[in-house]
Image (cartoon, rainbow over all chains, first blue to last red; front, side, top):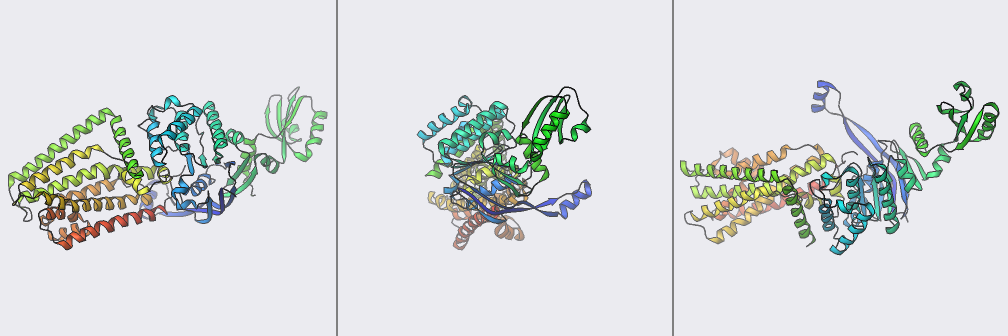
Length: 327
Length: 261
């Protein structure tokens, strides 16, 4: 039975448009012009317990709005959602005890105090006993490598340290369902790796379910087997990460190293030119023409080296967003 | 019990956050002392010019001033810091974190912050009230203070409920920093007995901006001059306002869109 389920989930907003200039400002003050935006359109989703699902989409696709509906922060305009057996917007305490939302661009830590004070407050909110509090802090802080940072005022911490503390605060009550909205935003490579490893270990130990949005594909490839892609509020793809390539990239990437440079026009006859870097050329070739095209390349051109690969996932997703396929 | 523990944690954290900035701590303490000195000076003017306000003898009117000072301190300590925070939370979208806690959100938003700097006002207000009561004709018995304290509590509930309902409007309008000033201006009218104002103002301060129930009525109760229907009306008004603030908050949340990411 799915732990997260959405049926025909939709959200539309009314936003005020403002024209530039003094006239626009006055009109905005006295006669506001509104328009409706369909932020999320009839999304269907079912996530089983223990799954880590990547939730992808370009900026403004409706990812955060969907997360907010699933956490009960905003009321859907239509459709329904169930998370851990509850209707999120009812915001029953029994539901709220089982979930957590981490937002990479917002913080719940108390800015002027050490993170340990925010942790103590959350322990009081979630009724975490002193014994459990110490045990959990020891374990989670060690995993996140921030044991020595908990007594330092939050405002004195680096972005990476703050984010790790945010994760610690968000997971203190051992939630079963985690909604992570860009948890590695702005972090350096080392901090990103620590956070990914932490999320993986936590979900394995607690059989937690995760819905993760991130613009860093490394987060997705490291943690998620399954991805859900949305675009302009509508569902574009729901399936295995590897399946995206099969479904949306009917081409493969051929990297060729030539003895000497060849004219662009001639290269274009083999397939779409992805890049030319001196004697190194990358071409995109349709899958069904791959064998024939490779043979022609080897026959026609002074090839020193040749390799065939799937295009990087970032590129596939990027194209997917650009083209806005419909599922 | 859990909420009591939570309340103590909230206040502990608030006090710790205020004392984190030591220079601000010193400046705020200084500011409080200056404000107190100003209040005492104003009071001394009352004693010197000797005329009657709305038919209230000096010491009786002084009780109203004392109760106003208590209410003002209560507002500074408990209400204003929280009302200011609600606006910030809505504007920055961090109200999300409050809504996700398995705690009554109105409780959280009403008690999360505490400012120590209203406490001198509360103490001064209590001092003035007791002093004035001792010099009334006849002096007040201690039971009068106890009975008078009930409408003071009702006045606090009324003040809180109106402020919270106004603060709830930030869900729709986001920036409403002026609410605090409006509330303060409204409260200022309670510094004097309602009968000191012209008739039209009395009606406004009783039925529209219910200041009369916050300071004048509690003072009349202490002085044994209250008509019981007014006392009952005060209780009904306070309870209805509290219920309304609660309903209004729940209603507003359905319109909450949360700040975008």
